[in-house]
Length: 253
Image 1 (cartoon, rainbow, N blue to C red):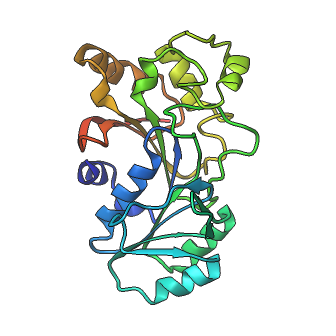
Image 2 (cartoon, rainbow, N blue to C red):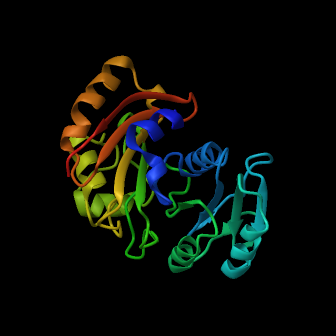
């Protein structure tokens, strides 16, 4: 899947990639990191709080400040995946500030950096508080991820992170199912999913968990959703768990 997307959208052109949204951010970050670390020195990190990598998910696991992270990078071999964060409380990693990620990228400590720059409490869709998302300003690519399962579920706090904000802003009632129009509108909003997105960043919307959709619904989603999106350069319907791309296409902002 990653090879197909990398080739289709020339992902090797982007040295600082921010991953936002919900529905597979951490899995995507480490999958991308492992792919590119076959020939590059890669950093996987966060500007929020994430669970530490699973055993074997990376070559180096480091906790410390950003300056020490840069020093750690200088000691590594040319092809390796490093996971790093400021600290670890025994449950989650605490990440770096966005400007610290910008500085690490500018210093050239790593060939490529993937940063999880959002939180969703493990849910596939969300609404945004005022302070979110902490996307590094120099990100040259932003991958926005959403889980296709939200299209099958009744809207509620159990399926949408900060559902109360979605209800307040878009009058989406508890028990209602999201329409393609509502889904695309929220994904395209500069007050929601594209808030703090660098204007010059290549923006890819990744619809994950497509294996959960019946063929008829999947076909309709692939046909309708990309036409409703605004502000994105590309769209892909995928399954991270099955390592599969169902559709991938370039878009016009």
